[in-house]
Length: 532
Image (tube, rainbow, N blue to C red):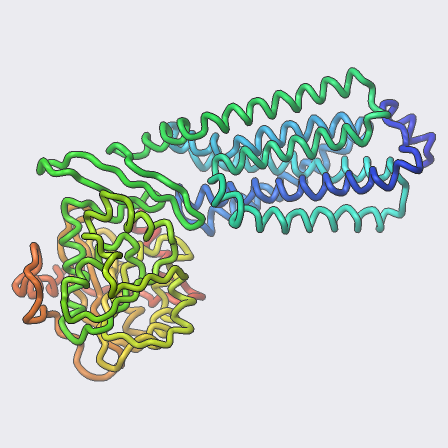
């Protein structure tokens, strides 16, 4: 197409002067870079929010990505008629994308809290964001060619190089900068503001001489309105988030934060006993109630410490409650606690309601805290321990399911002595029997001798554990308490004897062991818990 033809196609835009083209191309490719980074952040923010609120991260990611990619294709086709007015169309498009993308996390969170139609809302928002992102490239390609004509292959190479590098930077900035600095809600708003500036202001600056003044002022006013909306919501973000979050919890929230790994909420109320009830929720799932957590943690820790225990390893348990029980033994010389999220252990150390509950366990000089993924940490574990307490959340996501796999328990052998005792929290044999017996089967398949037991924890209902010793030969570990066990509030020999007996309808089931390639426990957990 000739330059004259281009002029006729868009009377508002004329080709840039030759001396202007180099700087203009650089600025336009910079806008491509920034817009690509913003687009990927929107995608990551939607998938992360779904994982926090719903769990099932694989499904959430698949739905968001597939819907957005489909919508991007529709957006590319829909942008074809807009190429005749590329500058104005692109500025309007980026203003809309900045507004929708910047508010997307807030809209979905509020929808989840009040309307309970999260999945339809997520699909709708993903589609609209994808539609707007898909329309960017055809318009940007048109603008790039109007600055300076070049071969189609070279233009595509320049455009997609800037686009892909921008996506890389956006993908890295989301977990490393935006989440730690601003959090999810404010992070999306900040990205929306950047998107508006890059997409509207930069493009209008490049084509300021070729765009009618009235059009330019109107588009700049629109961009200013978008920035004003995003800025206002940014200022009000804390109040909006607190109000929406409180809708999800029965009791008053006394602490809430979103970390790169999880959503942490702590509530407090007066229990039916008249005592204060402090509860910890991770990604919406109850981890303990202070009214009866001692039942869970006594049953988890003390049977595993009935043998040798000079060196103890705790995997998970960042709240410090299992650690509290371990430290009650004076002959425990050292405890290593491995937890992924430093925010969780910081809260357990410094937040009064938690530190009071765990008895200031993290201040004990015998304790060493490691912030790492337990799976990867075990690969290089050079120290062997007498007892291991595994206190992970239930395996309702792919990331957690790997911590209940045959491969994980194989790696655990690197941290064990021949006579070590291991205990794994296994979920509820009543509410999720297949999940529980899959965990027991998985531990056994990894080459351990196992003893299963269960107790009643009012906040959870019936809850089960797997006690194990390394090696396929020999007797299963005996379910007992050490003679020097400190005085306990719930557990004694009679309770333990009864704990090893399962009712007829909750005895071992024919279930698959869970592996990295076949996370059966994830399938069982999702299916069984969705009914409660």
